[in-house]
Length: 372
Image (cartoon, rainbow, N blue to C red; front, side):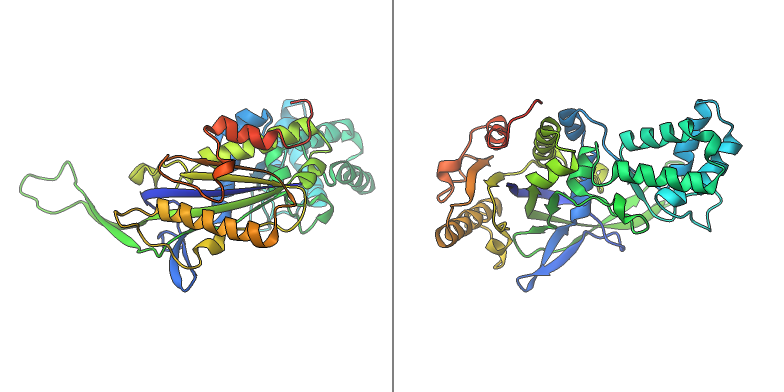
């Protein structure tokens, strides 16, 4: 079973996701330049959203190179000396997850690790229970082997279960992502703009003219198409078969995907714009349908201006053609929600919901039941 999420979201002038030149990311699609928000940016906004944490009720995972410090602080609290803790962890962490960065004096790992709170607690407990044997390299490797086996292919962190993790040096601790997230792209040709700004030195002498500093900030305004696909079976497997937690994770994902907005330059632009269209598809099996090609030919503003209405119309029409040609046999549920009542749907009119709660509920009632 798969849940697919499609969104049309229009942003006022913003710089939500920057490239290495500090300008908004873009790409070419359909032969023209489009505004773009990377999937990594979208996933981080979702996983760190308070809505996601509140809905799942479980701590999200931690991305860090500071595992030695994290565990040593806990071991010290448990009564071990800091010197002994760091000495043991300098051997343990490279065996369990990643070698240490030789250029770092702080014993950081060479790569970012993605760990659940339950996994960190498990490592701490195992180290304390086997403390006297850890100076023996053979015993340490045996302990690592046991821990890797215990954490293989499972997690308690909803975000890790959704987005997966990869450890090149310890592939057994890798986790297949249950969620695929596309880069958001504008439905139309985009024009990049520059904001020239100055700052005044408040303590300048009165006879001094000129600004204290000058600068430029790149920005654009774009109507984005967003797409994501969640494999329910993989999500359930990653969460060790916990149906209740899997359902809360799916609900948290849906709510956070709607509520979370990338944080880039928000203090300067405040582009807090909710989606104009939400479309959720629950399918039993089969290939997913990204609707990005609805915008392969860039939409143009309507006669009275505006890009949201023609974008929604293009998505609706493209969905109708896909459903007619390929059929709807694999679909269990289709649920659509529009922000503006003037956004008339045709192919999706029978799937329309009135509220966000009804839209989320339509997806959840299609999933297998379990204690929540």
